[in-house]
Amino acid sequence: MLREELTKSMKDAMRAKATRKLSTVRLILAAIKEKDIEMRGKDAADKDDDALITDILSKMVKQRKDSIKAYEEGGRCELAEREKEEIGIIEEFLPKQMSEDEIVAAAEAVVSELGAEGLKDIGRCMGSLKEKYAGQMDFAKASTTIRGMLS
Image 1 (cartoon, helix red, strand yellow):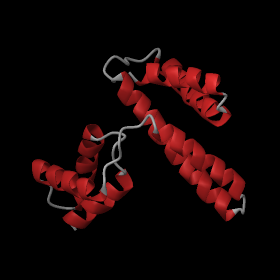
Image 2 (cartoon, rainbow, N blue to C red; image 1 turned 45 degrees about the vertical axis):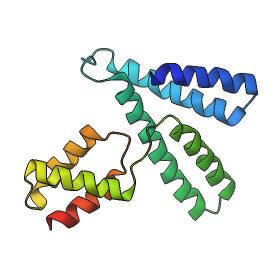
Image 3 (tube, rainbow, N blue to C red; image 1 turned 90 degrees about the vertical axis):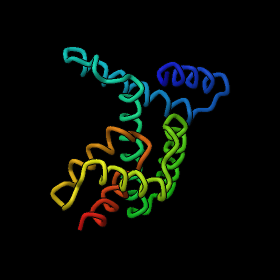
Image 4 (cartoon, rainbow, N blue to C red; image 1 turned 90 degrees about the horizontal axis):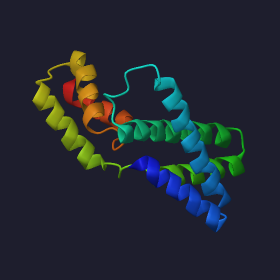
C-alpha cells in the first residue's frame, strides 16, 4: 500500500534528517488527506486507494514540471532545481514510467481493440489508456501517438 510506504518514508526521512525528502513527503500526505476529506461524502468505494494516490502523485509531478518551466523562464534556477529534487522524490512512489516504444505498443493495442478509425475516436482511446495505465504513461505523448495513428 502506497499510504503505508509514504508514512514509513516520512519516518525514515525524519530519522535521517533529510529535510527536502521530509517536506516533500509531508506535502504528498497533506494532498492525500485533502483528497480524503473531499471524497468523504461521495461514494469513494469504487476507486482503488493506490490508484487515487498515484493520480495525486502524477498531478504533483505535472505541477512541478510547470513550475520548473516558469522558474527557468524567470531566471530562478535555484527554485527550478528545488522543484526537480521534489519530482525525483515524488517519482520514487510512482510506478515505473513506460518507454516510448511501450507507449506506441499500448496505443496500437487500444486503437485495434476499440476499432478506432478517425480523430473522433481519440477520446475513447485516451480514456481506455488512462484506465489501464494510470500513473505509468505520459498521456501527452500517448495522445500525440494516437492522433498520428488515426489521422
